Structures are given as structure tokens and as C-alpha cells.
Length: 331
Length: 248
Image 1 (cartoon, rainbow over the protein chains, first blue to last red):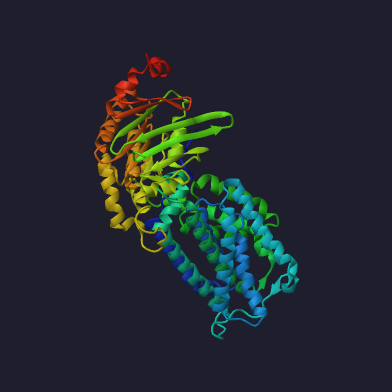
Image 2: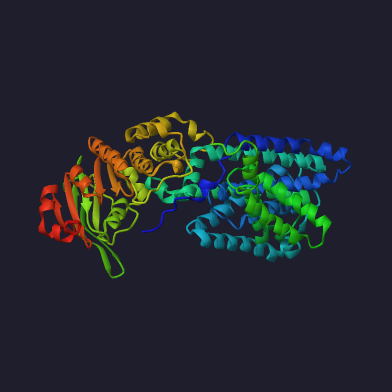
């Protein structure tokens, strides 16, 4: 007789699926929207590059939150999808295909396919085994790119031109790329927000709360979890397209398990299962990194300690904190 | 073969231990069939085998004439065979209504729908409310399931089985852990369910069993030692020695 968990992880997650999370996200989007003007006015136009990077990682964190936060699927290989997206851009570019729509389509299909194959295998396992297998697949992708000398191998690939749209160099300027990334972020947020509230999302959330109960009312969780995994992989692939354009360089380092770990930290830091939290987590993580690394060479020590403190004392991450500060817990 | 549920020569061993040892029984449509037995007799294992949570080593389980022995739990639910759990198993983070609506959703169209908010689907919510009303939880529909009292959670367990549109409910100790008043509510509920459903019930509370059941089967060390009307089983000397005697 096994001990059925009476307080599953989901019970403590702040239920910010409602208004609070939406308002939080809209505030963040509004800040993002005026940021280039503010940076210009403040005489720091270079900040837009950092902000683009933040948005790109926010998209990836958002996609991870779908499986981690709503599906309790702890994937330790999420960076691989970003890497596949980034390599789609760089590899197509070396063959003279620079159109962002083609690149994005290939990136989404390639990362979705990788998610389908690896997810179909790894989702047959649970818990620590699942984490290990996703990590292994992520590392496989990493070492594959390291050994693929035709496309730079360990050294990576430099992108000589940013992607174009129907031949127009819309992303060449930093501002153009920034707003393109922001548009993808906003689109991904509202897409995922609809998905988690849908029938599909309900099955995902129910499985997170109590898998056996879901089976006992007639659901087989596997195809739903696999679909979520593929969707998350595809969106992360799209983030990779933007990342390649932002850095104008692609390397296997994008796919390492450390990078996957950072994405998990962003989601946990921001608050799992809120979507808004994933965005806030990416902002918090990368800003903290930016600020601390400019202050002290050994900034990692402080960074690590701060992350531990935030996770320990905010219960539910930044979103949980915000939920308590602004009007307590709803529902 | 008679009966809504027919079990023939069902076996399950864990290592050398035969937990289910050649069990045969039939459940007629519309009856309440109680399975009693001392602790460790294999009652919960039997329910797991009937519901599909555990694979049987051998034997067959037929439901409505169809062999379901190899079907998964989810597939059996779709056929109309739903279960409740001895240790409360609900979606704690969901509201009571969403719990029931999720069970309705499992049998009502595809769940591969990504854009319409599930919470506003009246088809799901109406059927869910009907199930909740049946167990007396309509008032609690918008509370968080994890915040319910223990007795209410036991009612929700039954509501979830009902919401799947099951014909036969496998109830694993529905009264487990309930106080006297909570228990009375559940006993009245089961008596009411008899009008529309077939019930297979595992229960320790002998007063409840003999008040509710049409047929009682006694399970001891994985074998059914007696099966019949409550009075016949109560009078059976073997049953008295194995089980009832212990309670004086």
C-alpha cells in the first residue's frame, strides 16, 4: 500500500493563473515596450542588447514552465532545444538561406522532432530517471554539435548576417530585433496562457497534482505530457532562432546541461506554474548576473547565495512573493 | 456467463505470496456486492486487479460480457468501471467543481483542445454539478478540494467515480477514517446509488456492510471462503472463525 501524497506540489503553488498573473505580465510587457526609449534617454543604448537577451531567455523559460510548472516534468535538457533553434539559423545561413520565416519553421520543426523522439522515450520513466535521461539527451545533442566539424564543431559558427524577412534586413538593427523578440514573447505568453486553461492544460495540471487519480477517471497521461513536451521544445527552438540573431554566433555551449540548469533556476526563481513567473525569473536571473558580474570577479558566490535565499524565503518564487504583497493569495 | 462483472480464477502473487488465489465471483446488475475480510486478506489487491491498477497473473475479468483482463485502468473507466481509493485520492489543488468536471471531460469529447478555457465549458460543468449534487457537495463546488473535510473528500471520491458515467463503482473502503456522522452520510449515499448503479464495496465496517449489501463475499488469505446473502455469510462457521469471531 503506498502512501498517496496528500499535499502534492501543486497544492502549494500560488494559483496565479487568474488576474494577478495577467496584470503582472502586462506590467512587464509595458516596461519592455518602453525600455528602448528609456535606455536611449538614459544614455545607455547598449542596454537594449542585454534586454534582448533577457527576452530570449524569458521565452525559453516560459516554454519550460509549461512542462516544469504545469506538468511537473523536470527536464534537464531544455537548452538543447534552444541550441537546435540557433543552429537551424546558422546552418541555413551558411547555405545561403537567410529568411527568418524559413529558419524559424525549420527550427520549430527540428526542435519539435527532437522533443518528440526524446520525449517519447524519456516520458516512459519517472522522477530522477526522467531527469537523468533528459540530461543525457541534452548532452548527446551537445556532443553531436561539438563533433560536427562541418559546422564549426567546438568553435561554433559565426553568423555573418542576421536573418532577413522577405529579403528585408528588418532584424539588422538592435531595436528591430528587440521588438521582434518581444512580439514572440507576448505571443508565446498568450498562447501558453490559453493552453494551460484549456482541456489539454487541465489534463496536464491534473496529472501534476495526482497522476493515479487522472488514470482512475479515464486519462492516459502519456500522450498529453508528450504533446506538452513537444510544444515546449518547439517554443524553445524559436527562442534559439532569436538567440542566434542576438549573438550573431552559435556554439555547442548553448546546449550544455549548465544552460538547462539555468533555465530551471529562472523558472523556480520566478515561480513555477504561473507563466508570468518564468518571465520575471529570466529578468531577475539575468539582471542579477549582469549587475553582480560588473561589481566583483567572484560574483558567482554572491549570486548563488542570493538565489538560495530568494527560493527559500519567497515561497513560490517572485510570483509567489508578488501574490502575497499585492492582495494576498487569490482563490 | 451471468453478471455485469464476472471474475474467474483470478490470481496474483507477490513473490511466493499468493495474494489473490483463484477467485471466482459474479456481480449482478444493480446489486451491492460487499467484499469483507481481515487485514491482509488481499481485498485492496483484488480491487486493484479489477480496476486495472495491477496486472493479474492469470484468470479473467469480464465486464458487461467483454473480457477486460488486459485493459488499462483508463480503458476500463471508459467501459464504465470506475473506482475510488482507500486513501483519498483527489486533485487537491483543483476546486471541487473542477475535480468533477475533469472526470466528465475524460469521457466527453477530445481533450486535445488547446484554446477554449475548460472552466467555462458548460457541458462539462453541468454534468459535474449533477454528480456533485448526487453526493451532496453542490454547495462546496467552488471550494478548493484540498480544503474539504475528510468526510467531504470521501464524498468527492464517489462523485468522481460517478462523473465518469460508470455503471459499476468499485469502492475501496469508502468509510475509511470517517467519524460516525460522516459515515452515516456516506452509507445513505451508497444506499441511494443502488437505484442507479452496481456497487462492489470493500468495507471494514460490518454494520454498514450488513445494512447495505445484497451479497457478501468473505476473503481470507486470497481465497473466497464464502459468498451469499448477508445472513448466510454471517452464519457461515468458517467466516465466523476467520473474521467475525475476532470482533466478538
